[in-house]
Length: 152
Image (tube, rainbow, N blue to C red; front, top):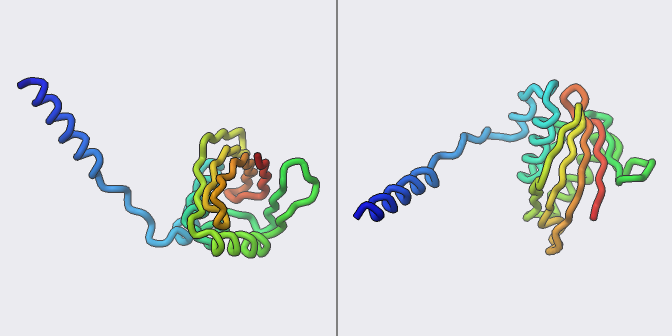
């Protein structure tokens, strides 16, 4: 009888845990990212960028980038994105063309104001093949100023 009571207790505990309410999400992610103070926390800036990316919320995504932010492919001297208007155009098109787009961070390291993510990306422009990517973000004054991407 005791094993059954223990099992029943475990099941009830699991059910309570599984049905625990999620934290309230901000009504609009873009408004939420405007209010956050990221000055001392590069990890929070990059996490907000990831959440906006996964929600395909372009305004929230852009809120964490500096006006003159740049994006590079690893090892290349020339940026392939320069400035927020280009980020808007490129990521707006990507979000529109990728309804199932999702990035999962496999690992994250923070060194000073630099955040390095190893990401597993699915649903990019309808491609069934996942993309493995190392992304390096440099954060200054609470904004991403530089991204560098290394694709597998």
